[in-house]
Image 1 (spheres, one colour):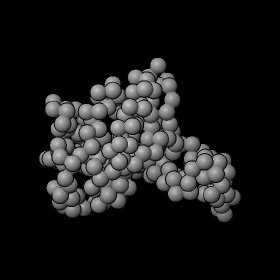
Image 2: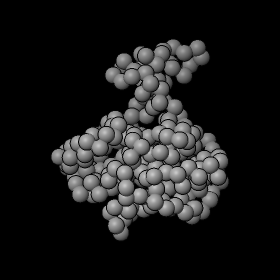
Image 3: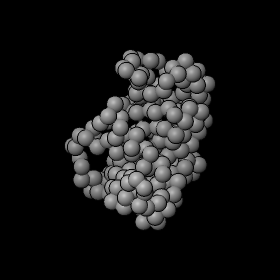
Image 4: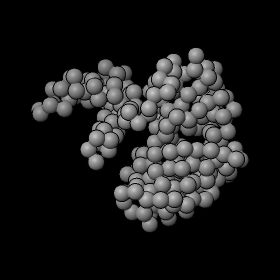
Length: 215
């Protein structure tokens, strides 16, 4: 059975890595990606950043980007067509295609990518994970499980599994009450992760829910 993996990856060598590091408040949502040449994959990304001039200057200076065009704008976002550079860039696209992987969703923010992928089996996932480690990519696995959600509408799931887990636990323990009935440390101990990781999951999860249901 195929596996679905949810993880975070961070490296200046990943496509748009330098831009994500330079603009911490930037949000990038991958719409689709394809490649006529595996060494120059093209991504269509919805990008949210208030200063478009600074954004495009940063993209121009980003060594992982060979070329980019603004395709359209909508409200406070813009759709960009971004072609990856072929120098000093982690060849993630070629490697996941080689092992039979499929990119299902990707969001970049706070200097890192949140990724959801499908792999044909555990061996394929392990091969891809080992490749990222050899390339020096920071990697944090949130979920690896049998793919029992084939065909579901991704738009119905605005938060990742790990974000949902942290949000539910925080709610159940009264973290959002006034005054708070628990601490980040308690939630972190329950999930067996760091307090910083819990804080990031809660913040990103809340941000996604606001974008999906409030804005």
